[in-house]
Length: 360
Ligand code: COI
Image 1: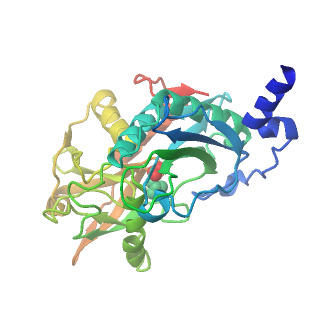
Image 2 (image 1 turned 120 degrees about the horizontal axis):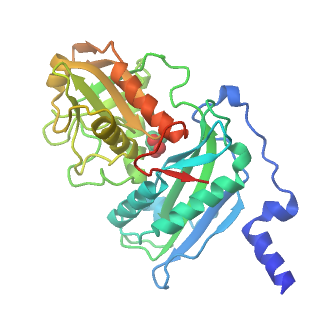
């Protein structure tokens, strides 16, 4: 019996028995948003011909994975992903921010790509356990956070295009600093494109891998010309703001109203977007609207702009370039207020009235 338990323990957590906690800790002072390998990742295998579909999963050393070249992930990009962060508090606790919201969003994304949803409770528990096992990689307070990257993809070898029955969910993590470290401290410079990020009715509201793959080339054209990223207009009218390559925009208008585009099939329901809306409305009593926002209104009436995302957090926009119009946005006061509250909750320095925090 004991030998059996030992085998299970070794399989679930090889590092415990083999002393395999050997990946180097990065220099906390120079963290950027780039990969540092950690000791463990999580893997669960799904099979729609089984009940339950998903196995309980294993914690395995961070390593390359083996997948059939014929897996639908490889040709057709049948895969979705998530991003969430764990933060160390000054008292030494580790807090995960809204893992349940990421779990639910991954379910919605998976369903859009005809993959069976990964149970949210299992998602949350495996994020918590993964952080525990990689605890030494959580940066000290103020230096950054541990970014978790869950993903779900089809592993079934198949040639034709159709639903898949064999799947994998992996979660790995990496300590990270800010997304644009080295860029301007006063915020990003965005090129406004008369082009959609995704098609209306497409996969824009899912965190589908392909949405991001297609955006790399587009953004790179403008990064080469000194921009930090692009801001897409809607695919239908080429008039309304949608997203950057990976964040949701907010604009403070001269009237004092804070506006962000409403969720539709071209916009990802950002968890930082939702958190910002709730803080703005419920804690700061701001006048907030979710409505279609024409680029011309931003140029004429915008006084402050920022973009939200797990990786971006709340990042000011200092300049927008739309055809031959240049819009400078010189204040970042509101973004500062919102970020202070958000960071306070995430770091455990403020009360969490929304029950967003999950202690590890
Ligand atoms: C995130 O903000 O977590 C994302 O997944 C966006 C990605 C472009 C870094």
